[in-house]
Length: 329
Image (cartoon, rainbow, N blue to C red):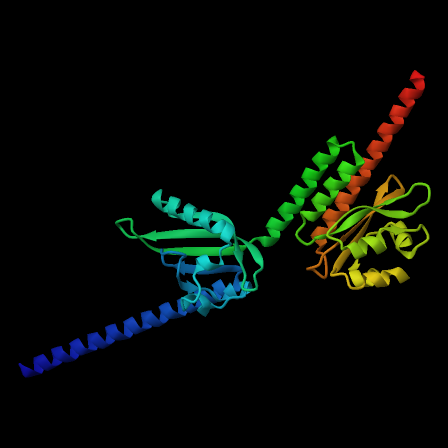
Protein backbone atom coordinates (compact mmCIF):
# COMPACT_ATOMS: atom_id res chain seq x y z
CA UNK A 1 0.00 0.00 0.00
CA UNK A 2 2.78 2.40 0.93
CA UNK A 3 4.57 1.50 -2.29
CA UNK A 4 1.48 2.45 -4.34
CA UNK A 5 1.20 5.77 -2.52
CA UNK A 6 4.84 6.37 -3.13
CA UNK A 7 4.44 5.72 -6.87
CA UNK A 8 1.39 7.99 -7.00
CA UNK A 9 3.28 10.78 -5.25
CA UNK A 10 6.17 10.40 -7.65
CA UNK A 11 3.81 10.53 -10.62
CA UNK A 12 2.12 13.63 -9.17
CA UNK A 13 5.42 15.35 -8.63
CA UNK A 14 6.43 14.38 -12.16
CA UNK A 15 3.27 15.90 -13.61
CA UNK A 16 3.79 19.07 -11.56
CA UNK A 17 7.36 19.36 -12.79
CA UNK A 18 6.24 18.76 -16.35
CA UNK A 19 3.50 21.41 -16.06
CA UNK A 20 5.93 23.81 -14.46
CA UNK A 21 8.43 23.19 -17.23
CA UNK A 22 5.78 23.67 -19.92
CA UNK A 23 4.56 26.88 -18.25
CA UNK A 24 8.10 28.18 -18.08
CA UNK A 25 8.66 27.30 -21.73
CA UNK A 26 5.40 29.02 -22.72
CA UNK A 27 6.40 32.08 -20.69
CA UNK A 28 9.86 32.14 -22.29
CA UNK A 29 8.32 31.81 -25.75
CA UNK A 30 5.84 34.58 -24.97
CA UNK A 31 8.66 36.83 -23.74
CA UNK A 32 10.72 36.09 -26.85
CA UNK A 33 7.74 36.89 -29.07
CA UNK A 34 7.11 40.10 -27.11
CA UNK A 35 10.77 41.08 -27.50
CA UNK A 36 10.61 40.34 -31.23
CA UNK A 37 7.40 42.34 -31.57
CA UNK A 38 8.89 45.31 -29.72
CA UNK A 39 12.01 45.04 -31.91
CA UNK A 40 9.84 45.20 -35.04
CA UNK A 41 7.84 48.14 -33.64
CA UNK A 42 11.03 50.06 -32.93
CA UNK A 43 12.23 49.60 -36.51
CA UNK A 44 9.16 51.10 -38.20
CA UNK A 45 8.54 54.87 -38.43
CA UNK A 46 5.56 54.77 -36.05
CA UNK A 47 5.41 55.24 -32.30
CA UNK A 48 3.18 52.96 -30.22
CA UNK A 49 1.50 54.05 -26.99
CA UNK A 50 -0.56 52.29 -24.35
CA UNK A 51 -2.51 54.96 -22.43
CA UNK A 52 -4.71 54.89 -19.39
CA UNK A 53 -8.07 56.58 -20.12
CA UNK A 54 -7.41 59.44 -17.71
CA UNK A 55 -6.85 63.17 -18.03
CA UNK A 56 -4.12 63.88 -20.62
CA UNK A 57 -3.54 60.12 -21.08
CA UNK A 58 -0.74 58.79 -18.82
CA UNK A 59 1.34 56.19 -20.68
CA UNK A 60 1.85 52.61 -19.49
CA UNK A 61 4.01 51.83 -22.51
CA UNK A 62 5.70 53.76 -25.34
CA UNK A 63 7.99 52.38 -28.03
CA UNK A 64 11.60 53.54 -28.19
CA UNK A 65 11.21 55.47 -31.44
CA UNK A 66 9.53 58.23 -29.45
CA UNK A 67 13.11 59.54 -29.59
CA UNK A 68 12.36 60.86 -33.10
CA UNK A 69 10.47 63.64 -31.28
CA UNK A 70 13.30 64.23 -28.80
CA UNK A 71 11.72 62.38 -25.85
CA UNK A 72 12.71 59.19 -24.02
CA UNK A 73 10.52 56.27 -23.00
CA UNK A 74 11.13 57.15 -19.34
CA UNK A 75 9.78 60.68 -19.86
CA UNK A 76 6.33 59.11 -20.23
CA UNK A 77 6.44 55.84 -18.27
CA UNK A 78 7.79 57.66 -15.20
CA UNK A 79 4.80 60.01 -15.22
CA UNK A 80 7.07 63.02 -15.76
CA UNK A 81 5.20 63.72 -19.00
CA UNK A 82 1.61 62.99 -19.95
CA UNK A 83 0.80 62.58 -23.62
CA UNK A 84 -1.58 65.53 -23.47
CA UNK A 85 1.37 67.71 -22.44
CA UNK A 86 2.92 67.37 -25.91
CA UNK A 87 -0.28 67.84 -27.94
CA UNK A 88 -0.31 71.31 -29.50
CA UNK A 89 -2.37 73.65 -27.25
CA UNK A 90 -4.50 74.74 -30.22
CA UNK A 91 -5.43 71.11 -30.98
CA UNK A 92 -5.75 69.65 -27.48
CA UNK A 93 -9.42 70.48 -26.90
CA UNK A 94 -10.37 69.04 -30.30
CA UNK A 95 -8.41 65.83 -29.64
CA UNK A 96 -10.09 65.40 -26.23
CA UNK A 97 -13.53 66.10 -27.66
CA UNK A 98 -13.06 63.68 -30.55
CA UNK A 99 -11.95 60.85 -28.23
CA UNK A 100 -14.91 61.34 -25.88
CA UNK A 101 -17.34 61.37 -28.80
CA UNK A 102 -15.93 58.13 -30.22
CA UNK A 103 -16.09 56.41 -26.82
CA UNK A 104 -19.71 57.50 -26.33
CA UNK A 105 -20.58 56.16 -29.80
CA UNK A 106 -18.95 52.79 -28.97
CA UNK A 107 -16.22 53.03 -31.59
CA UNK A 108 -13.54 50.35 -31.43
CA UNK A 109 -10.98 52.43 -33.32
CA UNK A 110 -10.68 55.73 -35.20
CA UNK A 111 -8.07 58.06 -36.72
CA UNK A 112 -7.37 61.77 -36.46
CA UNK A 113 -4.66 64.26 -37.48
CA UNK A 114 -3.27 66.91 -35.16
CA UNK A 115 -0.05 68.61 -34.12
CA UNK A 116 2.37 67.76 -31.34
CA UNK A 117 5.39 69.58 -29.97
CA UNK A 118 8.82 67.96 -29.95
CA UNK A 119 11.11 68.36 -26.94
CA UNK A 120 12.87 71.25 -28.72
CA UNK A 121 9.53 73.00 -29.37
CA UNK A 122 9.25 72.11 -33.07
CA UNK A 123 5.71 71.55 -34.38
CA UNK A 124 5.05 68.18 -36.03
CA UNK A 125 1.89 66.90 -37.66
CA UNK A 126 0.92 63.34 -36.76
CA UNK A 127 -1.72 60.85 -37.85
CA UNK A 128 -2.96 58.89 -34.83
CA UNK A 129 -4.87 55.60 -34.99
CA UNK A 130 -6.54 54.94 -31.63
CA UNK A 131 -7.86 51.53 -30.49
CA UNK A 132 -10.33 51.62 -27.61
CA UNK A 133 -10.20 48.60 -25.28
CA UNK A 134 -13.27 48.22 -23.07
CA UNK A 135 -14.53 45.44 -20.78
CA UNK A 136 -17.83 43.56 -21.16
CA UNK A 137 -19.63 46.43 -19.39
CA UNK A 138 -18.32 49.00 -21.83
CA UNK A 139 -15.87 50.54 -19.34
CA UNK A 140 -12.73 51.68 -21.15
CA UNK A 141 -9.64 50.02 -19.69
CA UNK A 142 -6.92 51.14 -22.07
CA UNK A 143 -6.31 53.25 -25.16
CA UNK A 144 -3.82 51.93 -27.67
CA UNK A 145 -2.35 54.50 -30.04
CA UNK A 146 -0.16 54.35 -33.14
CA UNK A 147 1.19 57.74 -34.22
CA UNK A 148 2.88 58.47 -37.55
CA UNK A 149 4.77 61.67 -38.39
CA UNK A 150 3.06 63.20 -41.46
CA UNK A 151 4.70 66.64 -41.27
CA UNK A 152 6.30 66.38 -44.71
CA UNK A 153 3.03 65.32 -46.32
CA UNK A 154 1.14 68.21 -44.70
CA UNK A 155 3.82 70.65 -45.83
CA UNK A 156 3.58 69.47 -49.43
CA UNK A 157 -0.21 69.72 -49.30
CA UNK A 158 0.09 73.28 -48.03
CA UNK A 159 2.49 74.21 -50.84
CA UNK A 160 0.04 72.83 -53.41
CA UNK A 161 -2.79 74.88 -51.90
CA UNK A 162 -0.61 78.01 -52.03
CA UNK A 163 0.02 77.50 -55.75
CA UNK A 164 -3.64 76.79 -56.47
CA UNK A 165 -4.97 79.79 -54.55
CA UNK A 166 -2.43 82.15 -56.13
CA UNK A 167 -3.28 80.90 -59.62
CA UNK A 168 -6.97 81.62 -58.99
CA UNK A 169 -6.16 85.10 -57.63
CA UNK A 170 -3.89 86.04 -60.54
CA UNK A 171 -6.41 84.89 -63.13
CA UNK A 172 -8.86 87.58 -61.98
CA UNK A 173 -6.37 90.34 -61.12
CA UNK A 174 -5.52 93.28 -63.35
CA UNK A 175 -3.70 95.64 -60.97
CA UNK A 176 0.08 95.32 -60.64
CA UNK A 177 0.31 96.65 -57.07
CA UNK A 178 -2.48 94.38 -55.90
CA UNK A 179 -0.79 91.45 -57.60
CA UNK A 180 2.56 92.17 -55.92
CA UNK A 181 0.78 92.05 -52.56
CA UNK A 182 -0.80 88.70 -53.42
CA UNK A 183 2.52 87.30 -54.57
CA UNK A 184 4.26 88.25 -51.36
CA UNK A 185 1.32 86.94 -49.32
CA UNK A 186 1.72 83.57 -51.03
CA UNK A 187 5.46 83.45 -50.47
CA UNK A 188 5.07 84.28 -46.80
CA UNK A 189 2.61 81.42 -46.30
CA UNK A 190 5.60 79.12 -46.79
CA UNK A 191 6.87 78.27 -43.31
CA UNK A 192 10.54 78.73 -44.17
CA UNK A 193 10.12 82.22 -45.68
CA UNK A 194 9.84 85.23 -43.34
CA UNK A 195 11.61 88.09 -45.17
CA UNK A 196 12.02 89.37 -48.69
CA UNK A 197 10.69 91.48 -51.49
CA UNK A 198 10.12 91.79 -55.23
CA UNK A 199 12.38 93.86 -57.48
CA UNK A 200 11.10 95.17 -60.81
CA UNK A 201 13.42 95.75 -63.78
CA UNK A 202 13.09 99.23 -65.33
CA UNK A 203 12.29 98.67 -69.03
CA UNK A 204 14.27 101.71 -70.13
CA UNK A 205 17.35 101.73 -67.88
CA UNK A 206 17.57 98.07 -66.87
CA UNK A 207 17.96 99.12 -63.23
CA UNK A 208 16.53 96.88 -60.53
CA UNK A 209 14.28 98.54 -57.95
CA UNK A 210 12.60 97.14 -54.82
CA UNK A 211 8.85 97.49 -55.43
CA UNK A 212 7.50 95.73 -52.32
CA UNK A 213 9.05 94.18 -49.24
CA UNK A 214 8.33 92.66 -45.83
CA UNK A 215 10.44 91.48 -42.92
CA UNK A 216 13.50 93.44 -44.09
CA UNK A 217 15.20 95.92 -41.80
CA UNK A 218 15.26 99.68 -42.57
CA UNK A 219 19.00 99.28 -43.06
CA UNK A 220 18.42 96.66 -45.76
CA UNK A 221 15.82 98.77 -47.53
CA UNK A 222 18.08 101.84 -47.43
CA UNK A 223 21.11 100.09 -48.90
CA UNK A 224 19.49 97.51 -51.16
CA UNK A 225 16.41 99.18 -52.61
CA UNK A 226 18.01 99.90 -56.00
CA UNK A 227 20.76 98.37 -58.16
CA UNK A 228 22.00 99.78 -61.46
CA UNK A 229 21.88 97.69 -64.62
CA UNK A 230 25.66 97.19 -64.48
CA UNK A 231 25.86 96.15 -60.82
CA UNK A 232 26.92 92.58 -59.95
CA UNK A 233 23.54 92.02 -58.30
CA UNK A 234 21.56 92.91 -61.43
CA UNK A 235 23.92 90.97 -63.69
CA UNK A 236 23.41 87.92 -61.46
CA UNK A 237 19.64 88.21 -61.92
CA UNK A 238 19.93 88.74 -65.69
CA UNK A 239 21.68 85.37 -66.07
CA UNK A 240 18.15 84.09 -65.67
CA UNK A 241 18.73 81.17 -63.31
CA UNK A 242 17.43 80.80 -59.74
CA UNK A 243 20.14 81.22 -57.11
CA UNK A 244 19.94 79.60 -53.67
CA UNK A 245 22.65 80.58 -51.23
CA UNK A 246 23.17 81.84 -47.72
CA UNK A 247 22.69 85.59 -47.34
CA UNK A 248 26.35 86.20 -46.54
CA UNK A 249 27.37 84.54 -49.84
CA UNK A 250 25.21 86.91 -51.91
CA UNK A 251 26.86 90.13 -50.77
CA UNK A 252 28.46 91.27 -54.01
CA UNK A 253 29.09 95.01 -53.87
CA UNK A 254 30.87 97.46 -51.57
CA UNK A 255 27.66 98.86 -50.18
CA UNK A 256 26.60 95.33 -49.28
CA UNK A 257 29.00 95.64 -46.34
CA UNK A 258 26.22 97.46 -44.54
CA UNK A 259 24.03 94.36 -44.95
CA UNK A 260 26.42 91.82 -43.46
CA UNK A 261 24.78 91.91 -40.05
CA UNK A 262 21.25 91.20 -41.28
CA UNK A 263 19.70 88.26 -39.44
CA UNK A 264 19.14 86.33 -42.66
CA UNK A 265 20.30 82.80 -43.45
CA UNK A 266 18.92 80.96 -46.48
CA UNK A 267 18.12 83.16 -49.47
CA UNK A 268 16.54 82.70 -52.88
CA UNK A 269 16.85 84.91 -55.95
CA UNK A 270 14.23 83.90 -58.52
CA UNK A 271 14.21 85.77 -61.88
CA UNK A 272 10.78 86.37 -63.41
CA UNK A 273 10.35 86.16 -67.18
CA UNK A 274 7.71 87.61 -69.44
CA UNK A 275 8.32 85.78 -72.68
CA UNK A 276 12.11 85.80 -73.15
CA UNK A 277 12.61 88.97 -71.15
CA UNK A 278 13.45 89.14 -67.45
CA UNK A 279 11.12 91.72 -65.93
CA UNK A 280 11.48 91.17 -62.18
CA UNK A 281 13.07 89.05 -59.48
CA UNK A 282 12.04 87.65 -56.13
CA UNK A 283 14.47 88.07 -53.25
CA UNK A 284 13.22 85.83 -50.45
CA UNK A 285 14.96 84.83 -47.25
CA UNK A 286 14.71 82.85 -44.04
CA UNK A 287 16.06 83.84 -40.65
CA UNK A 288 15.54 80.31 -39.29
CA UNK A 289 16.75 77.95 -42.03
CA UNK A 290 20.20 77.77 -43.63
CA UNK A 291 18.89 75.93 -46.68
CA UNK A 292 15.53 75.89 -48.45
CA UNK A 293 14.15 72.39 -49.22
CA UNK A 294 13.67 71.30 -52.83
CA UNK A 295 9.88 71.35 -52.43
CA UNK A 296 10.01 75.02 -51.37
CA UNK A 297 12.31 75.90 -54.28
CA UNK A 298 9.88 74.28 -56.71
CA UNK A 299 6.95 76.29 -55.34
CA UNK A 300 8.90 79.58 -55.45
CA UNK A 301 9.86 78.97 -59.07
CA UNK A 302 6.24 78.10 -59.89
CA UNK A 303 5.04 81.33 -58.26
CA UNK A 304 7.61 83.28 -60.31
CA UNK A 305 6.32 81.59 -63.48
CA UNK A 306 2.74 82.47 -62.53
CA UNK A 307 3.78 86.10 -62.08
CA UNK A 308 5.52 86.10 -65.48
CA UNK A 309 2.36 84.74 -67.10
CA UNK A 310 0.33 87.44 -65.35
CA UNK A 311 2.61 90.20 -66.69
CA UNK A 312 2.43 88.73 -70.19
CA UNK A 313 -1.38 88.70 -70.00
CA UNK A 314 -1.56 92.27 -68.72
CA UNK A 315 0.79 93.51 -71.45
CA UNK A 316 -1.22 91.68 -74.10
CA UNK A 317 -4.44 93.22 -72.81
CA UNK A 318 -2.81 96.67 -72.89
CA UNK A 319 -1.73 96.18 -76.50
CA UNK A 320 -5.23 95.06 -77.45
CA UNK A 321 -6.68 98.18 -75.81
CA UNK A 322 -4.20 100.35 -77.72
CA UNK A 323 -5.19 98.71 -81.00
CA UNK A 324 -8.88 99.21 -80.26
CA UNK A 325 -8.33 102.86 -79.34
CA UNK A 326 -6.31 103.50 -82.52
CA UNK A 327 -9.06 102.00 -84.65
CA UNK A 328 -11.66 104.12 -82.91
CA UNK A 329 -9.62 107.28 -83.41
